Image 1 (cartoon, rainbow, N blue to C red):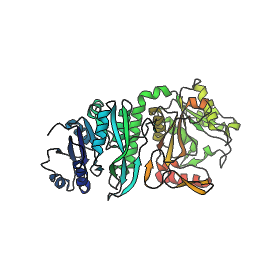
Image 2: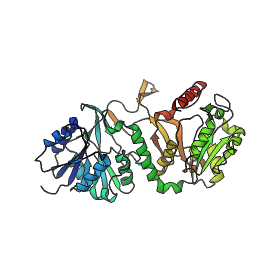
Image 3: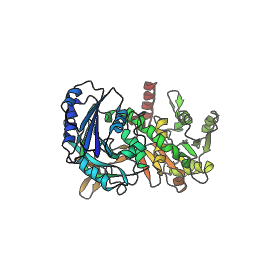
Image 4: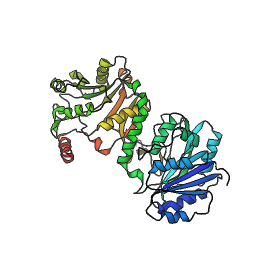
Length: 453
């Protein structure tokens, strides 16, 4: 066998039902000069029986590990690969027959590109196509590069991956996001708008493990932002509150599980070493007395003008005044933490900052994707907005601001803008969307707190 140009590797664990389909999709490739590594990471089903079907093909090598996890399997494949390029195919997914031909030729012709990835079909457990997932063209339709490709089925130069010391094994998830973050910051990447693999979604795959994914995502962002944070300091949190104009007077005084909403916000913010300054801005001086009781040098009080508390006034005006006290040149950044959002966690606040910083954006906000049809009125009736049918792209998805998490550069505030023009986003855990805007929602918040206590 001649030296392969491309190494394909398949990590598998208890995927016997789909594994033959994955392996056969490699064997059907129209390109030559490939090798296939299959790593069985402690399967307890009949995976071994499936692998025996491929004995004798000198293009295929198999390995057995005992539950080392996906990043460990990826590094094992990296250490054993003989190709110049490396690509992963998960044991429950399927290659299009031309993926190696198209992506391999792309890297051959573009020595300046380190990684290339295609579009894909999302399929169900039986292989029925659910949608075509299209990614905007990098640097042409997508200038922010804040959305990573699928972790599998991206072709990368082996020397680049080894230069980055391979995959992180401390995360347990989001290996694709981690790889994308590290590669895209140092090298040019590319994509082709051809659907060249079939990504299977089913009840057992990691895509559905939301808590594990969330923790890994936050760790990656924190590490990626660490070297850039100095450019965003001083970093302050502003907790605005007011006497009037909410559904009840002095909403900040409302008690939820033994603490006022304001006390809960203050204590959450002070628990983080990330923030240089925590400011309570209120037109009621009773809030100043509460602030004084903490004795933390990072915590201060800013007296709001009553005119600034009217609902129609842009809150950027207040945030700009607060920022000017400690950052007269407006070089730092501000985290907005609203009183009516009792379930926003410290981890989410930090993620907002890290998302903004790692993408060198003007602001970052917590959003959620609209999962239901949205329409607008036209002269001929209602017209759908956003994706319809089986075609989906990052550019036609619709998101709404959850009003619960926003980080912004102080330079925006100096111009009277809350967000600036370059806005990035992250999706919040559903529990954190909760917003207190009535006596009923306040009662619900109390019940939720009691249930969690």
